Image (cartoon, rainbow, N blue to C red; front, side, top):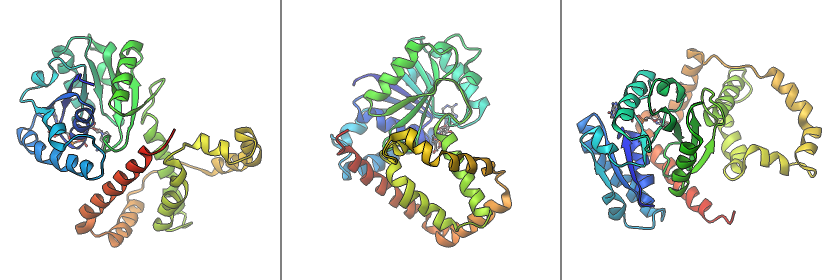
Amino acid sequence: MNERIGIVGAGLIGRAWAIVFARAGCSVAIHDSAPETLAACRTLLRDNVSDLAQHDLISETPDTVLRRITPAATLAEALKGAALVQENVRETLEAKQAIFAEMDRLTGHETILASSTSWIPASSFSAALAGRGRIMVGHPVNPPYLVPLVELAPAPWTTPDAVERARDLYARAGQTPVLLKKEITGFLLNRIQGAVLNEALNLYAGGYASIEDLDKVMKDGLGMRWSFMGPFETIDLNAPGGVIDYAARYGKAYRDVACEQAGNDWDPELLARIHAERRAALPVAQMGERSRWRDNRLMALVAHKRKRVS
Ligand SMILES: NC(=O)c1ccc[n+]([C@@H]2O[C@H](COP(=O)([O-])OP(=O)(O)OC[C@H]3O[C@@H](n4cnc5c(N)ncnc54)[C@H](O)[C@@H]3O)[C@@H](O)[C@H]2O)c1
């Protein structure tokens, strides 16, 4: 693909999006309001793209990919001629409202304006804008050049044509777009992650298991299948007669458990206990090294998943 893409905000997520689109062949202009962040960007991008090359996750040289990414000193320069602008500034409603008002003024209505926001619905920062029909959320998972999911969450007034064009752009860039049919806080991924986290916190607080064992339930249990099939396909295959058969066997148990599954108020004392256990297992000084280990495991998993036949 050879579209022009504008990236606004050159922090963790903005840089990662730049890699996604440059790797797919796009010309990417990246802008940050902090000149020092923009200046630091090149080295950080080089590190990430070199890691991808080491895991055979790019088909060109790092230099070829990096050459497609140009720093833009002004917002207007980053937006010029863009088919899609991906916004990645800080996560406050005021920041999103201000940047979208400015981007709406600076671009023609054919340009898609998408926000990486994790929690803020598009309707809350686009309602008053003339070009609101092309504004939506395109929520990535960190880092999007390794985890392909992007949640498309349009506002009620986003046009179907704009959603379809965004879906097509993300898909051609190698991402996996999913559509939120109507707005809800947390979109899809963070609601599901929240349900798991709340239950894990409750099980720990109730003294049912250690943190280490609760993490194992996911990494050596549920997560094994969930990295290549979702919960619905999982239950469909877990009873000989499919979903209906599974529900007949286990539905009552899940209904009973659901009655016991309360929310969790994220009590600071509980979180402090968990934090202390985590720091005993992983001292602060080792967190950077462990994060790098995680990213490398993720790259190996991506390489493995690319070999799948369907
Ligand atoms: N970090 C994650 O895991 C993650 C995952 C998914 C989505 N997101 C979302 O992505 C967005 C960015 O998060 P991040 O982690 O990259 O934050 P970050 O703090 O690393 O980066 C934000 C960048 O935006 C720049 N900025 C602020 N105002 C600006 C403006 N008006 N114009 C241009 N640049 C501006 C800042 O200088 C900073 O470099 C947030 O909305 C966040 O919720 C984050």
